[in-house]
Length: 356
Ligand code: ASP
Image (cartoon, rainbow, N blue to C red; front, side):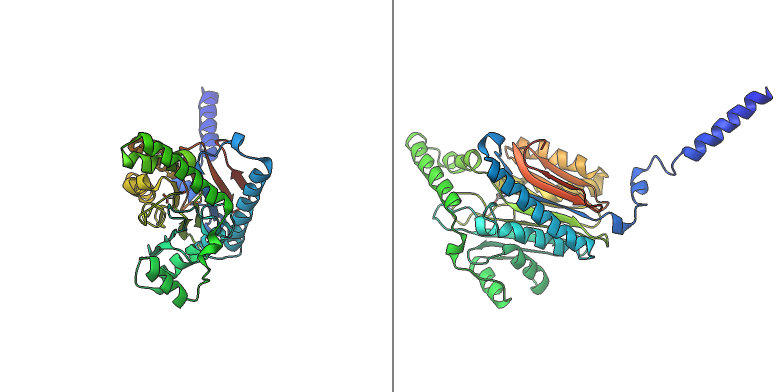
């Protein structure tokens, strides 16, 4: 009997030593990791009909190298003690300067053969934000969004006024021809040709106007969400919008709460996809709000919005996001999404298609 009591007590003691403190509350366990070891960033270069069969080896390599360069540049800033906003803008600048992505240099064409650029940023610590839309001469639209946030009393500026502000702030101004790339121009011609044939058979102008967007564009917007060593989150998004857009159409990318959102209490999000639906679903803020009000994880919130809410409306696309503990989500409902992530320990993860 004595032996039995002794074994039970020893067993109990051994088990209680192995038991982690507050095992039932995973968030508190995560929070024991010091803030300066949780930093990281996640980027996207657009979601859409990105299929291996349509990709050459050299083009795929070029995309992977550019994603790697942008991620590493942002990561270095974070590792050296820079802010999440600095990391976000550095990563986005690299993609804006590349013709591969639909932002800055590689922006898609409007119906009239011009390039109209949109961008936004948000600071999760202050909930301050900056956005611009419809600019045609600003080399790096994300820098202008930051200037609006930091140097003006406004949140959003558009078209000529935004360009005047860019000049006053000493940002780099380029001739609109800087944004000409043959690849994007040919995409516009294809869509216009298709539109003409469809118009012969279809009286519903609204359908004709929207249809070529999804079938023929690889969207290609760029964005980044980052968490720095000080526990501050930031997000940014930059785009040329959608090929063949007209009437000065503005998508979700410059809309705070749709294309971009950051809040230190929850997460930082950057969206890419069919902007009209992302505006109506308030994608970026919805993910944050679900975490804030319902206490769900970032991944649960991102799946709910991207796999259920957006498709239920008829839209498609994806998001990248990072939460206040450094957890990352890269969720999309299209064939692929250019995306990459790097955490505090320097593990780099780059993917284009569903699984690789
Ligand atoms: N969301 C962007 C827009 O609708 C397009 C994209 O993500 O590529 O303007």
